[in-house]
Amino acid sequence: ICVPCSAECPAGHAKTAECTPKSDITCSGCAVCAGDEFQATPCSATEPGTCQKATLTCTGDRYMVKPHSKTEDAMCADVTRCGDHQWEMTPATATQDAVCRDWTLCGENSYESARGTAERDAECSPLSQCDVPNEFEAKAPTRDSDRVCKPVTPPCEVGEYWELQAPSEKGDRICQPVSPPWLPGKASRWRMW
Image (tube, rainbow, N blue to C red; front, top):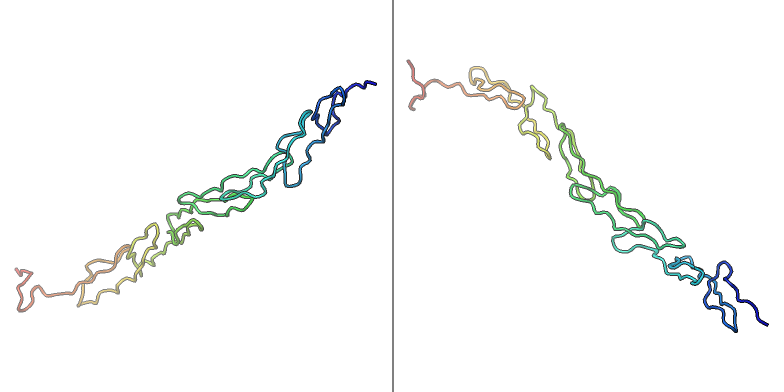
């Protein structure tokens, strides 16, 4: 008795051998991948598909962008390297990229009290304000140093000194000794008329 060949394999199976005068088509079940595998080639009418070991962890300086699924391997990417004048705010993990931020730039009324590094941000501190008229600015601030304030020299002693320069925001009082127009035993620097 002749029996007609089956036209197709049932769902979830692939035809692995054609019908012959002595046998019907041969069907094999589609590949069933384990939890740590993904289907590298899909099951089709003529191929049962193949499974491949999935990437479970990214190696080197890489992190996992997307874990493997039933039909795709995991996706890994290079960890971001922070550039010059940046610090790593959040370090990379196995599943997350590093987060870099530019160093803080200090404003006009502040200075950089701690320099930024690859691991931490720059720190800014407010500039010292001199207590004028009791203090003067002895040293101007720079990008990375505070202004230096010093006390103003007390008023000149009357009769002994005279004020050559009055104190200001940027300079100290300068007192000069009162000296006679000539000194005994020395050549006179002053000419009397």
